[in-house]
Amino acid sequence: MQCQPFSLNEEVTTMPKQKLILIVGPTAVGKTALSLKLAHRFNGEVISGDSMQVYRKLDIGTAKILPQEQQGIRHHLLNVRELTEPFTVADFKRLATQAITATAKRGHQPFVVGGTGFYLQSLLRGYQLGGSASAPQPKLRAKWEHFLVVHGIQALQQAVAQVDPISARKISPGDSRRLIRALEVFETTGKPISAQTDQYNPAYQPLVIGLTTQRSVLYARINQRVDQMLAAGLLTEAKMVYQQRQQAPQASKAIGYKEFFPYFAGECTLAEAVTTVKKNSRHFAKRQLTYFRNQMATHWFDLLAQPDQLMQIEQTVVQFLND
Image (cartoon, rainbow, N blue to C red):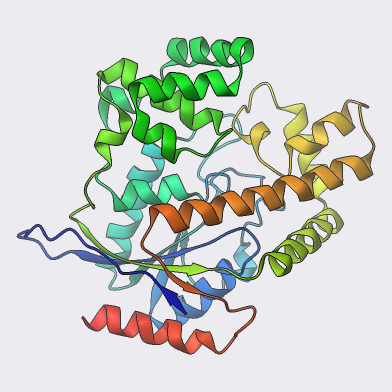
């Protein structure tokens, strides 16, 4: 087990902090299976921390757990939006907070499980996402999207660096959505978005459990998962997204769907599209690991190589809940 020191906000509050357990890691590493085991063991409920599982009909490509697979564990933030509806980090924070509160009131332990790091950070950090800063800014977004098309991603990163160097360093290269979001927030509020992320949310006492494994093992699992998704009907699901791509801009950018668009347009073969899905999924997994290692104090485990580490995870949770 690799364990990084965990720091908590030492600010004294009048209300006890809600203990929150997060399960994070790259795609295909086993987060869902672990969440079910821990939810059974610790009387828990699961709050999804995935930006695409919120959409109805995106089941196969998002590896969404189906009702018959949930083993009686209550799950939240699945299927809460239509494909054509936007979903922001502010929406996630609001709905996740509501789910956590409701779970705790039932006397159950909240588990937040997923791989969308920025969403999870919105819970752990003191992000100020309400009001005009979090509201979509169509004109500003269009302005910077045009800037991106004309000048390229490097120029967009430089624009962010001029007004918010901290965010420019933290945002993954090529993540145009978050770069544009940083510029939106700055132009809307006059303050960098990084200024909103200095403190841990005083409402929560978090334990972050991270799953990882050797890169070769992970990449093989990702390739196998894509093949399994195809056998389960991924192509039909991707075609549905392709047909609604103009009305569903967020869903149409999701890995596992967008790579098939050239195939549907007759611009590449199916084999080429599948190869691209696997490649982009592997690259995404690498970015996920980088994010969690750099942005969260995480207790890391490799259950694929050492299944007996499940006992260590359970002991870590017991100690955390009893502390």
